[in-house]
Length: 497
Image (cartoon, rainbow, N blue to C red):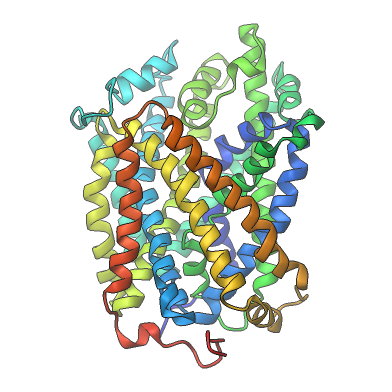
């Protein structure tokens, strides 16, 4: 018998834990600030309503109805669709192996915060002392010995959670981590808005640049952030929802998940840019000169800001990196579970056996990201996964369900157990609006990559990542699974219905 979540709250917390990740704390504020500021909220809300929530409803309904992870769900709709599920699982596996490294860095920085070990030059400390980064991605440069112990600690924590399963592992981990994350974030926001210069940081993030709305790139950024943030189109939400009871209200749950996630993004952004505004004030420069996206914000900009705070530097540093650690951990376990569910379902393995099958190769491959060239490999792999993998997976998913399988069947199933029904707007968002935006995004990203490459990195790294995604999809779909893997539940709509 398939496992089920202990309660609706357990599923919602797990879904929010997956959605609320490192990107919420460092990516969203910068994306908003550099794409129209306050005006970005409008295309972002439009993207949430036309893509985020509709696809969450779709994936929650698919997982709950077909009682399987992404590969099994698509195979039960039509065996020809199975490769899409494995493509999404491959994306999750790729993200898993490099996401570990980021969580390892965060764990290290919790320790560094007690002594403010980064000193006066946090950038040099991160690049030269922590990563010992090489000047080229052509070789690994060897493993960073001082990262091995935190690396093993993170792996031990994750393995402990994953082997305990859905209810005794992921459920409990999210119930512990999310309150800690929320508490730390509240303290960060309160401290941030009370600092001198905070208003300048908030103005940089929220002041509307209405002319930006007319720029296609802003809309592309909005849709990209929604996919990145909500963990949609790469197997996670289908996997999680496959453990739901059949009578679960997926429509209400999708709205609740999206609102909690995006509300947290904006709330966290207030704290982040308040502190960046203070840092600009302390240095006598503009906010735009301080703000940086991604890794730069978390490991270069913020440590400097922490060091310059007028009081409680150590406490604030610990709180900030603990919040990053809890956000990263809940997202990481959700990504791994998407892979485990796919393997477990196709070959009807026990949970522990499937977990071992996934964790051993992931453990071995993830070592490359704690080498001295790890940052370069990570940056490029992240670019491929998010700019190509997730976008292409989203386009194909919506094409197959929207145009080669009647979405009306899915809408009727979703409405059967919902407190309020979704109308035809949902169908047309999936069939037209989101496909057009994602298709445009994919074409633009691919054209840019073919013309200019990315970051000056060797092109072969990107092609290796892309080849990995495609080969896994083809090979795993071709290998025959257990008979039950292809058997759809009696009450689930089939391709021939």
